[in-house]
Amino acid sequence: MRSAILLFTILAVAFVFNGCSKKEKINVLVFSKTEGYRHESISAGKDALTKMANEKDFKVVFTEDAEQFNERELKKYNTVLFLNTTGDVLNEAQQNAFERYIQAGGGYVGVHSATDTEYEWPWYGGLAGAYFLDHPSDPSNVQKGKFTVTQKDHWATKGMPDEFEREDEFYSFKNISPNINVVLTIDDKSYIGGSNPEYHPMSWYQEYKGGRSFYTAMGHTNETFEEPLFLNHLWAGILYAAGGDAPSP
Image (cartoon, rainbow, N blue to C red; front, side, top):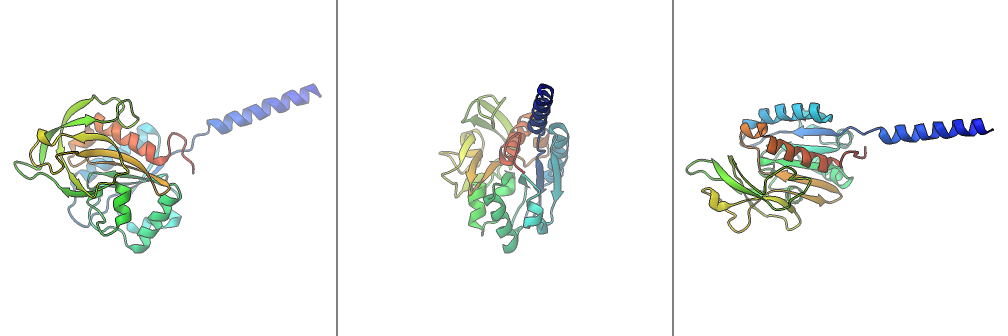
């Protein structure tokens, strides 16, 4: 009898251990459809995300097919990443499907011109956290500017210095949501052409309508997708939006 109880206990512990150690792999849909300006860096972003997926052991699927935005397809993914999308990229049925996906606990990550997308869909503007207003043009659209970490020792800014300079195309924003949690700002005095002089957020996150959202304005240049500082920041955002190390299916 004791042997049987001991055997049962060992098997039960082994079952629990195996169940707890099984890790659900994150599955990310990267959407890069454009109906306006098309960033050259989309290709660099895809290459960087492919490499990141191999290093971080998550799945990634790339598409520009808006027909993927339906319940059957979206439920396969923990998060959807809008990689430099522009313009009106989803029809009404696809918008409704994406809204239901977020409401069911799905995740959203926006990179750079993801805020230059779907101006006529206010729900999306709330999800992204703001809409693109403008960017510098003189003396160049790409300049060097000074960033400040607003939330130190945070998952989104881990490893970042308190302040740092980098070169990119710096977006200014309109319709900035009061609900976003800002982790990075930029100093408009550090470059020419900024339109948010009082407070200029550049990366943020939030819980939204049942799901999770992360956005970073970085990502215009090809070189951005080679920067460890940016790539670590982007991975942190993907992990947050997808639900952490052990996301729910």
